Image (cartoon, rainbow, N blue to C red; front, side):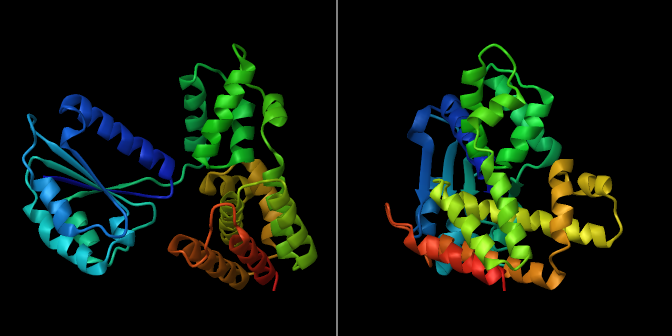
Length: 323
């Protein structure tokens, strides 16, 4: 019996690992014949069990993938699945894959933790992110200067999907020579990070006019609304870490080492952190979690070509953060 739970903020690496496992399984065990995939809110525990229990066709193993069952499945089905896990045949490989952090209180999570293996994919930061960028450039047959690696990580952050796209563009542009900081300035939108700093500055100063104007500049530039929210959340996470460590008397270099962020980012954030109290940061987290939860649960509706509810929610978020 081989039961796994894949989860974590780094959904890029999670999907990459899952795709690699499936590809290698199909190479070894005869293609898609012995692979089953379940996805959606209507997943049935017994159907998963039957798929895992069916004898492999002309092979030794079966591979079953179940997506977002712990976060979206019905409670009664998750309970039933927890009871069925120990009965799954030894020839079966079962992977639960989750976009969101699983609820550790539910019986299914506890059972997987007990008899299976948890595989977490945390967001890449610091030296790990720099190493990922370097490796991805080399994989595409390119080269990149050290200061350009650091600059690209500052501009794009830990969004690996966007980083992959930007790296493909940069490698194609640079050709046989190494990618430089100037290349990034020419080809990558470097204004997002600067505008996020400006936005959080406005929030820290309780300047609603500045904050809302900056938010709408980001929206009008065509920046993806989910990415804007992600960057706001990321910046508040850094501000909170800087605030906490500064209050303990740590130096800038010590904070850099602790948070594994580039010195440039920490230096800029130290000034911002002075504008927020811990109570304000706690309230900011509550507001950010609320909008993130509503987006994932459908509380904020996003239709094809119609983001009006999301835009209104971001406006309200920024106004509330300024209070």
